[in-house]
Length: 435
Ligand SMILES: Nc1nc2c(c(=O)[nH]1)N[C@H]1C(S)=C(S)[C@@H](COP(=O)(O)O)O[C@H]1N2
Ligand SMILES: [Mo]
Image (cartoon, rainbow, N blue to C red):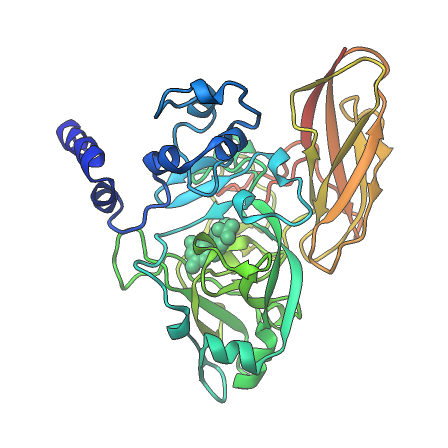
């Protein structure tokens, strides 16, 4: 944008912020309004964003941005997601730091957002929402949201959703794309119907092998003939009983950024197979070839970092690998010498479950077994905790390492480099200073 045009926009912003938003974003409402944040947020949201209580809040001049916010958030804030780091604002991509993922079920305020395009324009009327099921089925369907809710049995599960690119920031040479650190993972409770029940109602033909999901969001170019994203899975995953067509997250209608009024959840698989704003399912007689089906792949064999790999040598990512997070305490804390430290976090393993979590305070020389809970249901992440004793004062790093039900472990450093920087399940660690 030219300097002059930008100045003009700022003036417009002062006079008519709604119109300025519309100019900048080409649509309303704008979830990323810094001005909106300043206008609407009180002490609570500011403190949440900073991560601390602000004793002299009342002395802050109007419109003043605390330094901590200016520094940590690069001045970008998503309304309703004040604690998240914004990696990109067009399309919106934001993740929480690990310590904000401490809840057993991730609340919407702390849930990462990964958009490939622009959310559907205008207000969505759920009463008019239709889901089409077509392709390799005996009876193509067009179901309203109301019919979906009244004709099929409801199920509620806590389901893990992780972006295939979570951890991309760890790869070297770096891969293009959002530089996710550890926070593109969440486990929220979803209510909906089984995709399998809907597919059975439509009657799958023998030729059905793959699904192709479509959403109502808009390609970044604004071109209506292009999808922002259209991915799918083999039929077996679609028929798995935890694969839901959901309209509720944590007991509320899906938030706008998470696909209101309807989304798919393919738990344990790359988040890109969990289409938001779901309005069409095309049952395919071959591997789906929708927008970005050629992405979310990794080489079929290990490659030297920096290698370019031909598409035919790349495999579509299915189950995500075993991983864990330390969600409490946050990194950088200081504790008195001689005091034990309780730590806790979550662990998950795609289609598998987590068998063990170990922690180390000496850079991996010795390991202590953590207390690991069972998942509340299959595909929910598992909570773990441990009590640590530090032998002397000094600087420590606490490492956590999960092992899945097949004995696969998280690597200490980044796993096999791949051209697009997917499935980095390297261990998470926090810094602790004692004394
Ligand atoms: N329609 C649509 N669905 C989508 C996306 C998208 O851009 N458009 N992004 C996908 C990706 S890549 C991920 S990781 C998850 C993220 O879900 P969330 O934004 O609710 O965290 O949504 C998936 N579903
Ligand atoms: Mo993703």
